[in-house]
Amino acid sequence: MSAVPLTGGCQCGAVRYSIADAGEEAFLCHCRMCQKAMGNLFSAMIMVPTDSITWTRGQPATFRSSGSGQRGFCAACGTPLCYIGDYGHRVITIGSLDHPERHKPKTQDGLQGRMPWFVELTSIPEEGETGGGPDAEWVVAIRRSNRQHPDHDTEIWPPEEKS
Amino acid sequence: MSTGAITGGCQCGAIRYRVEGGLTNAHICHCRMCQKAAGNYFMPLAKAPNGRLQVTRGEIAYFHSSDLVRRGFCRDCGTPLIFETLGGTGPNVTLGSLDDPLAVKPGFQGDPDAKIGWLDDLLGLPADENSTAWFEKVALSNHQHPDHDTETWPQEQRS
Image 1 (cartoon, rainbow over the protein chains, first blue to last red):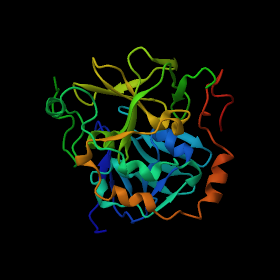
Image 2 (cartoon, each protein chain N blue to C red):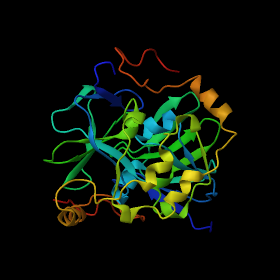
Image 3 (cartoon, rainbow over the protein chains, first blue to last red):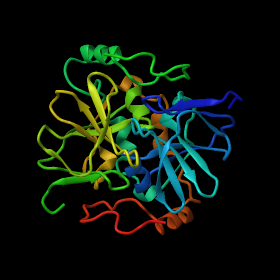
């Protein structure tokens, strides 16, 4: 990767971070702890150097999920953000990066928890937006009142009270 | 699971829920809002039609990600739990928060236009053979709520 810092944060924008010196060690973890912590089928993470994370807005709340480390999240919207290991390792959730598409995982672990139909997931039928009602109207209405922080840093957030 | 009810909750166990009568509409959603809320590539969801979801422990916190939708999570550990269209036909629960996520296989993909371009490539990634020792170490001090309901939780004071 280039020397350009990686940026990211939670959905609501209360917590934002910058990573000065990310490596390229991106991976998936299928373990049951990652699944339940994320409410997901696996976690997608990128390892970063111990002192490379700067919290540029707010701070993550933490839950000590085991005696080995803590999981960081946004207390205002719940977005899973990081794993802070007691032995120095730091891991960021790839989906919270402003550009997750730039960090393709190279390995997967926690295979004891992997869904047996994991390999089928991207071949199931493709349909429209999550939710209900006519898709076009739905998409427009969501966009009009979207409170998700944009995928870049902002001077002030939220910009104004939204109705 | 003896009653046929589906149970689940957050990682720390402060929130527990039960769904009677089954889930519908199991899918994964690739939209950027689900990605960022999940900190992942997609959000796996299934709907509990109105009246079927009962929160059996704690109180779910919500973020209104737009005027149309609220997303529920545990304020103590952050686990994303709910995607709900306001005034809709029922909340969706996150499939990873189910006690038995194997039991509900997603049947379709929402917002495929937002899918990460190389997602298909991930399915064949090599396994990390060096991680076994780490998982064994974590298991010795696991603070995650077990994948079933408990009478009291937490059971002891954690260090």
